[in-house]
Length: 240
Image 1 (spheres, one colour):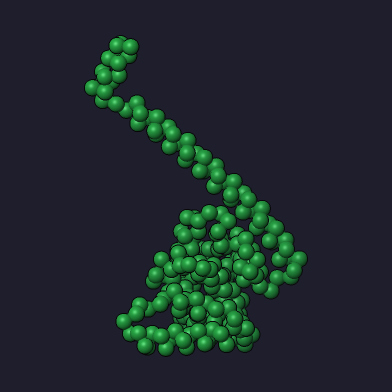
Image 2 (cartoon, helix red, strand yellow; image 1 turned 180 degrees about the vertical axis):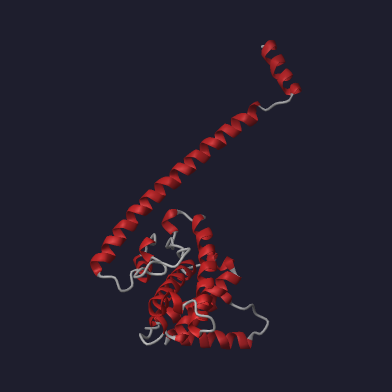
């Protein structure tokens, strides 16, 4: 297992160099790959194993504690986004199994875990939304929907991933479209492509408006002169 080997090598390196930094970015990538490559277990909560849940929470909590890791080189930002999407699947699976009453039961172990996962998802989603807005449209990963403010209607998922604005990368799209038929997946990918074009057009309009505002400000600054400067301009005009 390459992920396990990478983790072992990292532990050996950190043990040999105790003065080194914590290598949080590398730990995040290893935890993400460990969660993504785990096949899950239908008998566990929402089809996820305990180790997979711990890895997903580790990825998200590390990002919450160190938001600068979203600027980490490579696909780290996309990994965190997909980890958040998998938390959505976990929450939806737990909600489908336990129901509205089950996830609110006081003193229940799974209800406490549901609350912990939900808090983590809300926090990491906020960071992802802020980071996503700063990126060009082509580099943005998923636009993940927020949980419903109230309990969803019976038969509805806790978080409707159908409202997700999919990433342009097909590898990332697979995390959202888990358990979807190929026809549904293709239809939603086409819809996401149309939404991205609309988003890009809106961004271009905003940038054009910003450029125009900047030109107007420059003109205003050019004519925002004091009395001495105006008298100097008038004397130059008269002399010519």
